[in-house]
Image (tube, rainbow, N blue to C red; front, side, top):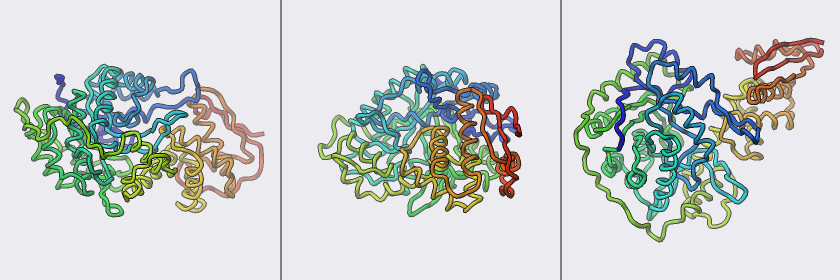
Length: 480
């Protein structure tokens, strides 16, 4: 185990939550950064990915401690860490001087003959000794590549337990012990699993080597279709706060408590509520007992799997295909074919893809919403999703969608030109080059209205106009 600094209480940082930091009086000791949100696929074979270095520089200047928490290189599957992504994550870790880094005990891509295929969502691995062995190898590779201590986050799991699997707690314990790594204990994930019929939280906690827990995540969720979702959609539930308070003295090496909330939740959770949540997390922080001995874990290492369980490879292929909406192929796992949780994962994966598009192709999305509401957007999106596999990064997903809009040509005036403009902006930003986009009428009233979330204006008089771009920014608008 590594000696780590106490960072205190903080939150996962999004641009929309910056006002919380602006008014901070010292209550926020740490901000956690998900680096993939400022990584981009360039389309250049020589340098296929790059980092938004300006964003990294701004984050580095914040006075709070920083942690780096990956969301696109999970360690729970059979794919080893991608060397280029590992280098990008290391660059961010070093730039932000993060004392440790973390990733999810999940998988989000499946190895096939033609190369990995994205699943479109973080998916739960089969919880076996063989899976734990592979995850531990992935974690050791991550830690070596990042050159900082590593913590693995327990995953949320909407699927039914499979006969012969390890329990949720025993699987996490097996992975962390084999990898000799820290644990990022997401208490809301364990609580969600319990509420959805998996292992009770206290049983899972009793199986864990709690001395390995260096970081705690707390979040809010909501009920949907008979499930409780780990949605990061609001404040922490009171029952979960009580459970966390009960747990605190048993975590002798806890160094950070982090609140997770998506920026979309600010529509009903105000900045003042977020600050009050942070204050309440300080009451949990005060309950720590550093230096005490953690309770003995109830589960020891498991040496072999029950021969009845599926293979991890068959599990990943089947689950990945089902969530993408594809045929499961050879050796499908029967338990997955009959599990109603798969339909929920399909829905969540689709919503995640739509959310990426809405965030990275805002003007085109708003144009569709203005001409038919959610149904209009969903119709175009579902056609696109049925024709194209998921893409992990928002800019890549948006470019695929924008190309689809231009080819599909829905009967909405100027929609194709708006999509062409947004596509050019993204390409120009990724390549750092100059581009020109032609319009057949004055584009300023339309683009301004969409940017300001107003209804598009009436059609403008025909004419020849061009918008010039450089590095993703508009440099000139010319008529004639």
